[in-house]
Length: 620
Image 1 (spheres, rainbow, N blue to C red):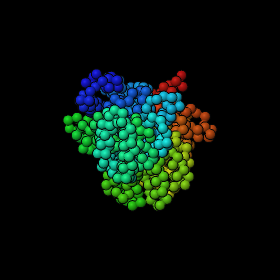
Image 2 (cartoon, rainbow, N blue to C red; image 1 turned 90 degrees about the vertical axis):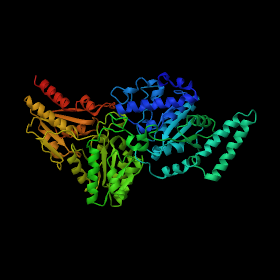
Image 3 (cartoon, helix red, strand yellow; image 1 turned 135 degrees about the horizontal axis):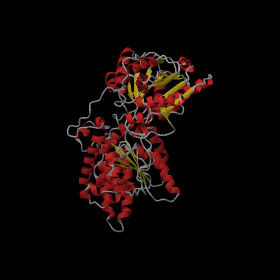
Image 4 (cartoon, rainbow, N blue to C red; image 1 turned 60 degrees about the vertical axis):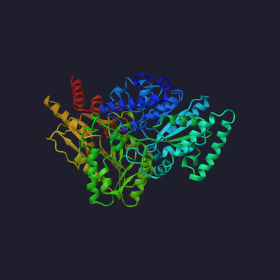
């Protein structure tokens, strides 16, 4: 059946009894492809019926469907003409794992971060109103995303607008980690009374079939039922904000969903439809432990649900180090923004529950919360992905740096992250952290360096302290190079003419490139920066007398370490050559991390070829 669905128009031709088998086929395709390519499994399995119902009731692309985060858009892609390409999802040059307008007119917004859908949808709704476009705009937001403050700013603004905006709350009791907070508890109460809407939808259906008097009676009953419901239940937070609340409804019953969507088109106030879904629906392993199947790696065994065993990683080592340091110091606290498992804090949360805080998908709040903990005499350690910390930039400046408070930010997924693509690449944290006064930033190249830097940042008495580290495991470092984990920088070699300067993961590739160059009689020094802000003055002095300097940086060139290092050299009168290899003014597309390093000449061969070709050209 799925082979005949090439657009939403094909979907509308199906009968109700054909929709269940279609959803089964979609789930089979999702499980097969994601097990092979990796990707977001549980969230996509939970939104199959919802997506089918949306495309049957609305007319995309005239009606705009906006998925919050976008990681649950796989069924949407299959139904909107990309079925034959679906096997390429999350591969280099293939479909994105998130919505991308460059792929299809049915993808309205680039997405990848949480809590943005209602703001974007309201903007589109207003634009439609201004140009007399009668299309609907539908925002699908999860209960986890409702822990982000941006969603409430948008709800507050949207409630007073009379345009064709519909908000769909997909409530699956999960974000990535278990949902926390008052909204989660509020939704749990609402979920306990789904029978109300079933009665309401059924009664409206009956009345609508009565000639002449049916519609007036239905309108009168809608008013009276709302009054009665408020007396019995009290109104929901959404109704108090000005929305027409519909729900909760079964998010896996397409007939009920379609009825509800049609009802939403008739409300006088902006409707908010509360649907309840099961994350991981249709795949028993994902239903039982959805947090384990939120994002799976390639090579998952479909029959057993087993994924490739997780190798040691910087995230895992960070979590282990945090447990050790917390045992030594009862002031150490760990904070996460709904990413407990992702940043390696699961064990910490078990061993030190009173000192572990999951604040939900609210990075801005997380940073300011840390400043309060610090002011109260504790040592807050916020673990957060590089691309998500972008949301807390104002708080880093206003609530931490200006007050000179000692807060530790551990930036996970720094540098290239792989298949998640543009929205998740950790290439901007160095430039924006470089702009924040009184900030110290470390970027270790190995696990032992991470532990050493954590200790240093936790003992700091003032100022924003940052430790950044990449996704995955530490790279291979040739055994002959002995790293000083406590040093702010280190020099390998004794060539005073040519130096390679780098930091973080790329340090290992620079040392391997040094060995490869030496085989051909090209001797270079490697200067590894462990502290990248402020850049050690001794490292600047060490570089001043060299004729040729090559700086390699796994991040944005503009505002990065390379640009700052070369600027300092020039102000001190440096007369030699500085060659910078970094990411130019662009967004890095999806690919494996290894391929990204290769593409940007940041692996061993790239560094080797860059240095050799430059020196060879200058010797002509």
